Image (tube, rainbow, N blue to C red):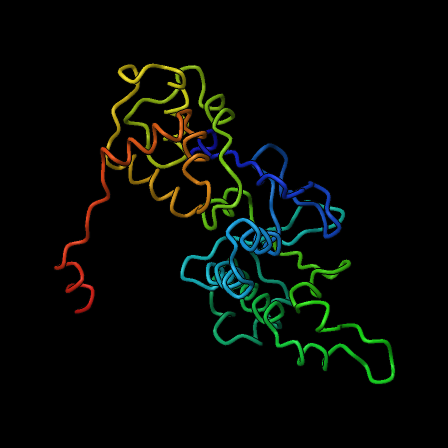
Length: 279
């Protein structure tokens, strides 16, 4: 995607995201596209906004890191830009020996998979196991399972994980944040985009927002792939998603609902199920 078509993502309302956090600078470069969000904060958002239990929220995040096409991950730093984990260091090679097969993978993939495995293990460790590991006999207990989950304990004070991903990645994978359609339209330049330049949801927002406020007959006709992208975006975001998606495209929630009604979702063919089963 061309630099001027990269969607500018705004943090979710109430997220309290700040560039400078107790865990380091949440930016990897200068400019509006250089922000990152900690993976732990994505988990918190999934639990709060999507009402997911901790187990499901952690699984959604870590499964993407452990999958076939994991994103490039970053580590926050207190004094420098967040560091892309795209190279092997001496400690990394030693660290990856703990995980079967990771040392043979390209560095960005190996780092992402290792992050997914280690975060899942620390966030979902059994409370009694964590207590045994961190509480020393005869001394004040570090961890009390009656007051905190292992996830909450791992995030308390300055213990929090420094693993992060760019805003655009968090939005694409988990629906975190919202597209700043106004900024996208401005970045597209005076000439704007034509219908044939719309290649994905981000460019669809750029194109549609330029027609904001126009009458129905003055707006471009919806193409099948545009409807599919908008519907997929609504599905991935969950509660209140249709209104948010409509706002990013400069139309009302009711207008988007009418688009979906005029273009119903194709029903799966029984032959597709048979094909999938045979595969």
